[in-house]
Length: 465
Image (cartoon, rainbow, N blue to C red; front, side, top):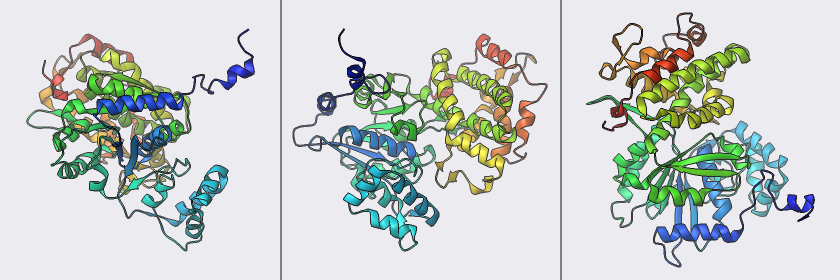
């Protein structure tokens, strides 16, 4: 017998994987440094842009893994200055701190505890960038992170960065990277950019097409496409930081995706690589569309499992139909798309947003940037997908009426979400009418339609046949 059960348990994490040693971490870092041409004494500079939940967690994961190798890597995060923490949030933050002995001790040791006491009493105003330095993301107060090096000056953050992590919402990506371009005019080396953003824009002329965050970055900065990657997967930020087992894909050019997948991989966070950048990026935005409707329906039916399963069948059949428009081999996307959709419906912010709307806790007039949650990217995605799929120039043949129709005519859930969230022509309860419409296709029929007709439209992703 090789060893006792106790001895074996000591050698494994709870998720069954062997822990990485410092040596293997340093070897991975050295390999990436060599690829980027870094010399001794010149640290690899990684900066996260945007401090939402996922952007903060992603930066914190890197800091936890590599931050101790200070002579070889410098990890920072940028967020805008001036955002105040309201009194209610400060009180809740104080409760979180005192419920975690490790966090409490850390703050006392750093002489940072007193300001949280004063903020709780209303004697001091805290700022989002200030608490992020202590490991608290304003959009995820209940999950303390490691302390982070926070920069509030964008030029200082990015001008010499080797790797830039885009943690911004898709709706802010273009504007911020247009500003970043001004600080990169004198650069000699080309940075590598990893985008975490899940969202799209619709460009309707001269030809209808989808614009993704990586394409926005390419247009804004002129950075070659092969240096811009997308990372996404069925992930909830707080659970990943708490070391729940998860996986993701980093998509882009082989030169960078394979070494970055190796660099980012951790025992509880498995990163695969894939060459299909734009399609995976679009799928990350598509599931947010239907997650909002799922949250609305869950609240309106008192969490009826039957109603939710009916909705899931309908929305997945629409997503499968849309993937047949966007991808030449859509079957390869089925697993990743359904996994990402499933976790988003269970615990994502877009499903939460739909629930809160249906419960009356939020209203559409409050906009899609919600305190404590950040940007609800599914709202802009509803608008973009509807407008794009409404164009007659990309019409498809209706299988029963045998006439050309805009693709959106075969997507009744998407149409209703647009009328509720964007046009505001119908009340929230109308999502139930869409689901219960007796004239609607059997979801199986919609999938068969997609599989038996040539719907592929490469121009939607800016590609040629």
